[in-house]
Length: 192
Image 1 (cartoon, rainbow, N blue to C red):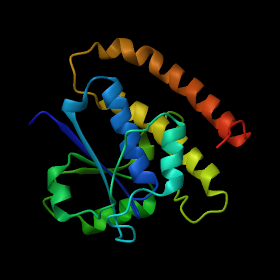
Image 2: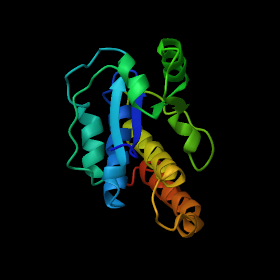
Image 3: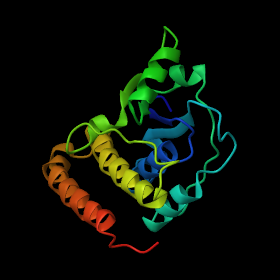
Image 4: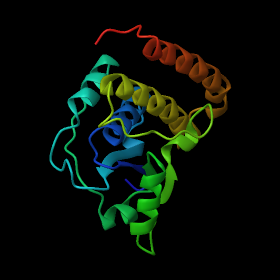
């Protein structure tokens, strides 16, 4: 479909952050009845986890937050991705530097930091993979990605829906959501 917007989420190993971003993005567009307008995927800069499912803590976090129908096998980014996707969104500064370093000269995709769309301002989504208290950190990253994804989809949506009506409440709702989830995670008001 030619009017599809194609988005590729990228992180170092495609095991925590980028698969969560992909799953959250797909979850939102599905809820908005827009899956035919979007193509969403995720990939790694390194081949550490190729052909493996996302880290079990990332999967647990997705399930805990109601995203239960997501499956993915890690893959590395390819040169074709730079031609086939409209947007390639990295999770941190290293991802962006690497993407810009390896992109072909005739790159079609816009390369940006996913955190650019956070409602509280630009955010780096740091790698939780080898951090102590990893499940708590992954939950926090999930929160960042969800808040960003909400804004990214609503700001870049290509549909006939009345966008201006939706935007009136989006910032307020997102800030409330962000506070609720931050409190939930930071003050251990959850059971996993």
